[in-house]
Image 1 (cartoon, rainbow, N blue to C red):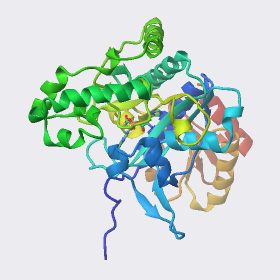
Image 2: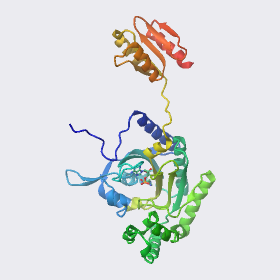
Image 3: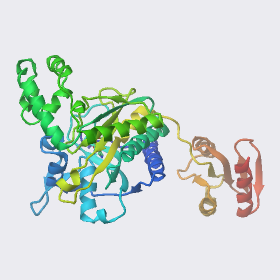
Image 4: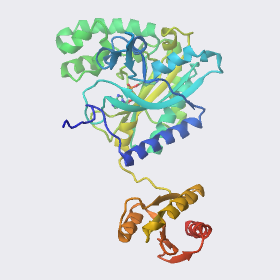
Length: 413
Ligand code: HAM
């Protein structure tokens, strides 16, 4: 028989990890909720054209990494590689520009990129994503960055550093790209083949290169942050002043290149000191032209996404506390129905209850009670006995109501 395995680049999330993941999403929802961000969900697949236009035709994501398929009617669909394009599409489709602005939303779920799997890089991964659409106020940029830092802190992901830059407007960028291309052309012989191949379409990617010759050329290359218009430079200065006022450290990194084309003005990335090659815990930026590019009214936006798997890798296996548990065991297996009813009553009273459901010996049942961390074990036989696992005392209860009372007393200790 064929042995089935999870598809390459995908993982099964088993119980302890699954609980940690839920916990992180809860932390994020709590931090974001207190700043007015509401949960929202968009479909896992969309029109391929949405990502091609939104993320950008020259990006690695669109050129190499999309899971694209045809539906039965021959429409081209793609599993979402990121959230911002879908959320912007939904903003337009539902006329959300008519709501009070900015519209602040967050989402969490699976995303798909056909990349070479390695530690911290998967083909199906999970993002927590937050977006604020409909205002270009620099407090939104700073607020979102600070919220992400707070989520990392509460999640225990450890030290990371924040890289920050500004890309200006598309016009500034276009002029700058021409300038950079001219600069690179004059030094073509020193560049890697890959960078030379991209010179025409995306010379900015040269900042990403590992190739030593290219890196040397890039160290002296003109920088976009030095070419910003006064308005964009002021916006960036305000974002920095707000981060300074909040006491969040960052490094201005003019070489910060994000793998998506929709960015304007602020871009940022948090890089973990605890992760290897795939060290970006999360990143994002402003995308003031995206909604219009997708056919909506001119609408500024800013947001970020963080990789849940990377957050967990960085946070390590901190112990998750379980709610206090009552374990129901049987000295007489014939009392299973009474125990079943009692378990339900105790759960309705708010306790976490587990009971013997695998035919263990009484000794085995006590071991199981220890394993689940029970603070009380109820033993059903000829009588009902309630054992306080901390003190070791065992008392007889005459009625289920008395059991509940004894459990309550033990819980209060
Ligand atoms: P991104 O930088 O492509 O941005 O992805 C954000 C985060 O998702 C990364 O920092 C990383 O933690 C995680 N991630 C990305 N690809 C993978 C992968 N293959 N395996 C595991 N984790 C991964 C965006 O996606 C933008 N939509 C963020 C944004 C929102 N910008 C504005 N709004």
